[in-house]
Length: 245
Image 1: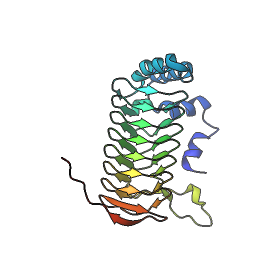
Image 2: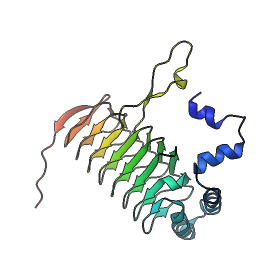
Image 3: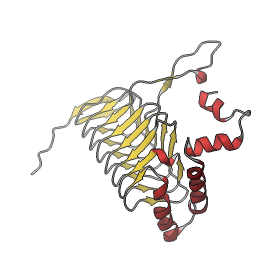
């Protein structure tokens, strides 16, 4: 099993202790209870009443939260004290914001949209998504190091950004127990566009205004204004920047 599995499934610790760490990290007992009660009673409340109630009540759970956030039904929030939200953020139904580790964190800029069933998971790392980004449905953005996105990045449905690899084991040590091979995180420049089902591996930098074709596997850097497609993705074109009037 992974070290994380071992920590949270250890039968020598109480189930409450493990759950509290997973849900609230090292937050105070009051913060833990407040988050639990708020989400228990409001997470699945339907319609306009539910949307309005969550917008008001959830704001106080986070490290910072701008004006008029919107949280859909069934949104899962773990360790909200390590999450910062800008103004007008939308987290759609059944999405997850998940932080693990006291130094980890998630920051969403103004008017970021996170689609249904998408997961943003900072596992002992940091995720920063700048203003105006749109994350499609059923995406997974996860890291043990860092993921950063510039402004107005468009991420199509079913994308996976930031997965790392385990270092190799041996016959006496299963792969699953090995530490992660950290390669510096993922950086995506402003106004980039990732098509549906794109995977971007750890250690990759995608430049400004780049386009990644659907179903591509990005294992190496893509330059500004580049167009990359395939598995692994290859740069097939460098677009000419369009002048603005």
